[in-house]
Image (cartoon, rainbow, N blue to C red; front, side, top):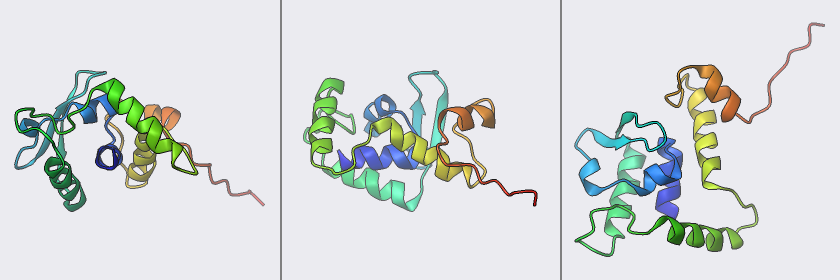
Length: 135
């Protein structure tokens, strides 16, 4: 559970796209994905943190025959997520990780692959605006 959440935060991918990552998607240059919602292809370049999390997730796999990084169904994942959230003081949804990624990435001038920065701002940026009074 924690590895999928970290990958979701680090990459900005949607939950189902994270669950669909296979070992074959992990290349020397990065992770190749085809986003389920849009059908767009993306290459997520390796960072030291992403490489570390993927390595740990790979070691935690149960079956060698199944090439998925996370060997769990969507409904099984949802159940596990609910159980994990029951143990936390502050609950959140997987989509909140995408919003957090967008906010952090936007500060560096990036966008989530949307056609414009406005789409990212409208849907994902939840930080308050900073307003300087004119007097």
